[in-house]
Image (cartoon, rainbow over all chains, first blue to last red):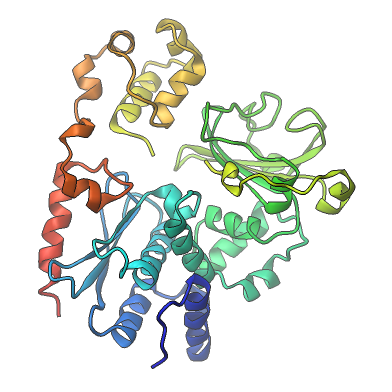
Length: 290
Length: 107
């Protein structure tokens, strides 16, 4: 057995991906996270393995990793108040906590929605998210589906969500974290932003919404601002300068009745077009957070 | 991340067919403040404000804040154990502790 003390999120996720590639099951990317977590923990850490991975009603909480009273066994629990795809991602997130953090936090973890998405200042939660995203959506394969240079629409992103058995939001956040394009996701309700996330190039341009402060309204002239959700808006509408920013933007918006939320994807001009205009950014990346 | 108070206000507002603006108007609050109450976790509104909201929505203040546990009633153990997440009900906390016991018997 390898010495895996001190392995980080990437190292673990890539190692497990290689194991999965080697066995190459029929539905390679839609594997059962619970089975994997139990098998791997039993093999690598027989002294304190994961004994159960189950769904329970966790109220407003998304997931939990907790030890038995003796501390010799672990359980992963995911909220049943959300979609199966989201439950699977949460299980992977808690598995990440187990592999990376349980020695430092022997009492275990409770994770809320922003934590599972990695939209938090907390390094611990971001590491668990990085593990989950890398394990469920391996970068080599993801890049073949949507390249770092392309500007995907909801159909392409949804196809990826199906391929990896994860939520649309998980796919969009995964893509935003490596794309070379300037793009933003905005999640809103009743005309105000719940949270937003910018790709690095968009962030460096100052194109981000700081939703942790006072509520920010979505632009009244935008499709989402006018509650206009049809096939055309889903496929992308060109918005002139002045609607979202002082530059034209391509807006894609859909409403999720199920979650009572509106999802908007914004594609800005390509990063290259901005290069001459910008100062190097010194701002803390946390400013982007919800 | 919405609390019980937030959910109740939003549900009652929608049931009465009020927009954010309308409820804001009726309670002398801004539209964005009502949205914040429903979607974020701002400090609890003043007793006066709560009363105004309860009155307009046709419920009592007690109903609105009923299941909220004041911060100081939480035990030190809960604070440490739940790290960021302290809003679970006592019922769920008890259930999770029970599950820790049962987990030891799993083979």
